[in-house]
Length: 264
Image 1: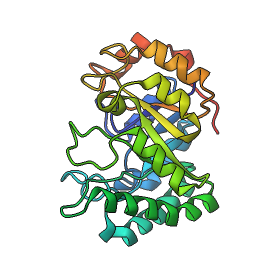
Image 2: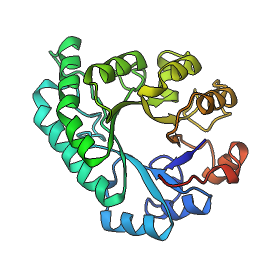
Image 3: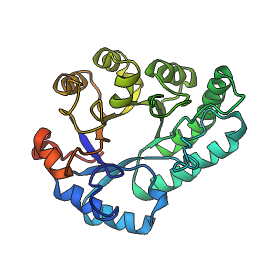
Image 4: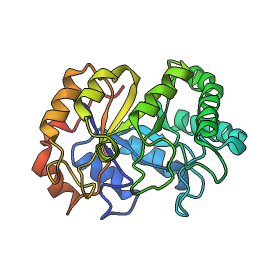
């Protein structure tokens, strides 16, 4: 099992740029974050290099995230903007050594039917797929729960897998977030095992509360063992809000010796 720390949610008791050092001190060799381009990329490059870290994933531009936007993959009126956002993200990914990108699907715009949103998502990913293929980057879109994000388009793994199949590119997969999918559909182990070839990245947090494994209802020992046995070769990213201090929470469930992964 290869783990990575999400620096947008974890180590939040420290300033953003200090989190790289704290993650390395906690034993991690891989990290991810939402939007590195919201910060000084020169400084991020330095922090990654100085702390021996690999940034395995970040999100493409999602619009006004603070204002509630969650991307625009499904928006027929913003196809050109989506394409540009992928090109921009690929440029940054090359700079940071990142090989995975998550393009949030967005909320269905007013007046746009589900069918039109689905068609736009497929067309957008098909158009962007050659960019990702040429760059050696895996392009994904993540399912979110509609309890906390009402109106979000990509709300189940079933829909995500169907879109991946329709796009039919080796560079396009589904980002499976255990926290969101537990809230929307459950059946975590069977879903992951049956669809592992369509899953490019896994993120974890417990339900309810979105805290570390062991704080909620998900049987994480079983889930993690099933992921390990499924043949999944990617990373499992800790995208949770620590219930207390980040380091103390980690020590309760993830031994330090398991936090370091060989860079890929």
